[in-house]
Image 1: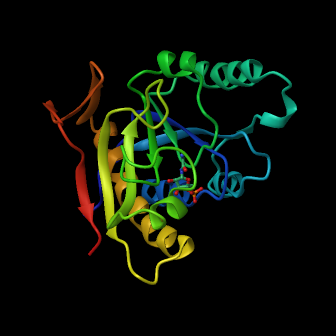
Image 2: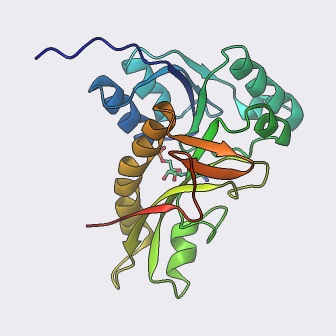
Length: 221
Ligand code: GAR
């Protein structure tokens, strides 16, 4: 039976800095009708980000705002904010975007920004999480989808992917498994948002109207 033609109503902007495997998964799921969003822009701070090529191949508008062309950080943030504000997106997806957002940006788009971070937040905020977790006594590593607020990697949690650390793990092996999980949890959370099931209210995550006291966890199988 032919599927009814549906018009996605959630307009999304994806921010990237690098290779763009999460972006690719999102693009693939849109094409296969699993994700009811329309990407109106892929924006990168890094002119060499391969994710820009992925977006172009899918016919998505792209924009590069090269961080290194700015002598003043505030001007860079202003430029990113203005480019996004004029498109008035329903959702902003950080998919490997490696710049810290300004407080003003987080405030302007409050409740509309999702991020994926490669650790089981609140553990291991910041960079080099694979190396750091291997140097710790932790049994598990993973990735977390969360709403973005002014404090770095600290917004309300939504969904995590968890994998047990193996004796022969190194940062690369662990990253491969964690990213495999990211490609499952990020589209899932984006779909919940697009379907109106996921919201941030008063600094907390609501899923289907219920306050979440802890993130949902998808275990590696
Ligand atoms: C992802 O693994 C994501 O968790 C991480 O960057 C990677 C981007 O990969 N994000 C952060 O570290 C943000 N603090 P991708 O470009 O292949 O999607």
